[in-house]
Length: 355
Image 1 (spheres, one colour):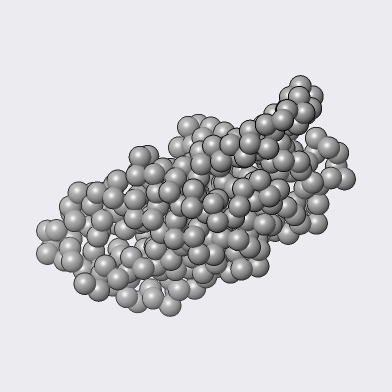
Image 2 (cartoon, one colour):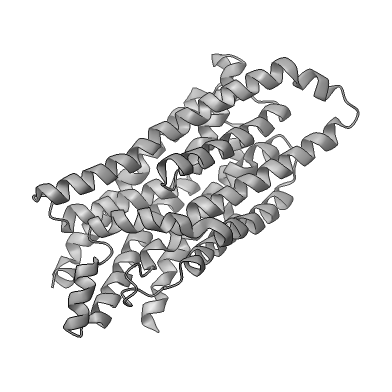
């Protein structure tokens, strides 16, 4: 029974992710008063779980790979050796404890940043925590391990730059086009309010679905047994993702308002129509990054990039670079803090895990 209690850290991570990433689906809609906050969080919660159930399990592979290379998840050789020596239960407990530590350290980091109203990335915090663990346990003196780890780490880190820049570019182009050819006609229509509200709800629902698809695996992936030999506590990939999606949904419903208002209303001056386009641009970026990179990307970074891109259409002065600077600092701080915290815990527990 104790081993299943270790899932609590993953669920806390999911809750923290939900408190943060809810802003990415409906932040602009709520800030521009098109959709009520209560309506937004209910839609988000439902669509996050749906996205997790339908396609969330697709991202487990990449996360399991970087976790294995950094000694968070047991390799197939380690599992087979444990089966032969009849120590599989001990290995299973250690794997669950490692996941507990990774998620606890990254979850604490995300929660702290959320409390300070920073829309940081849970995926970045998790990656930082995994790297922090690997710096303590992985044999970086081996050229083969060094090459493998650096390749994966650089691949993950590259999304931290490509993702917000891509969202800003897509948003800028879409907002420019809408302002030039569509916005005046749309605002002159008698049914304008209903059309915009419907558009926000549809776009927000799709964005929330992408959050469940993109991020649910991040919550529970390290509890998943990829070997098929009973090396961890979750064996069904779809159920693993659904558990993560439910945890995110609970975070959305309980503590998401702070970050939602920061993303939606503080970064740039945007109109109601601009806000709708921002959601579309952000969701498109997440989908494209997932298809091109196969890595869970930061929905927080994509929506912030999209808001900045939309603001730049109206001129540089319409963007609050003071707020954006604080958010950018948080993007760097989040994986760094999570990595340092995890490294310190890894050092403190090395006598147990290295035994």
